[in-house]
Image 1 (cartoon, rainbow, N blue to C red):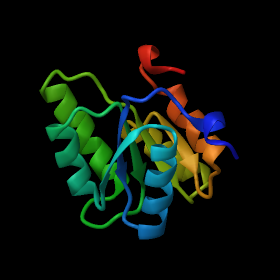
Image 2 (cartoon, helix red, strand yellow):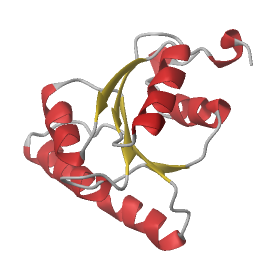
Image 3 (cartoon, one colour):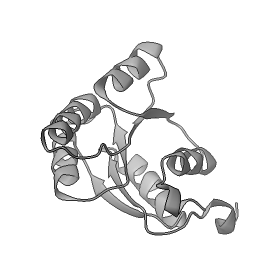
Image 4 (cartoon, one colour):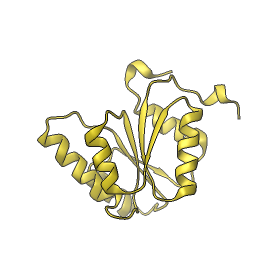
Amino acid sequence: MRTTDLALQSGMRVLVAEDDRIQALVLTSFLRLFGIEATLVSDGAQAVKAVQGGAFDLVLMDCLMPVADGVDATIAIRRWERAAARTSVPIIAVTAGAMREECERCVAAGMDGVLLKPFTAHQLRDTVARYLPCELRG
């Protein structure tokens, strides 16, 4: 795999909410390979605080995390965005749960899409590219 095949235009900021250290390393390493700045948090409560305190273009949200899971964190983020009259940041569930019910639960919570684990670099890149602001698309 050539880096040039995967690179996106730089300048995008992605929040990665993932408690598994290996998955976190995979996600952040791929994102950096794409030229994207990745910020990592390890639980849902930290994800909510990070979104409230930073300007992210996208959130990659693990569904099963301590303190607050990805669904609860997404509900809290969407509630805060509405109360603060903020534009909704795209939130993508990153999950190994391919069951229809889990995907429906993620969407019902306000997530914009689902990326199933395990994923390839190309699948992650395509998912991220789908939610890039227009001016950043490569």
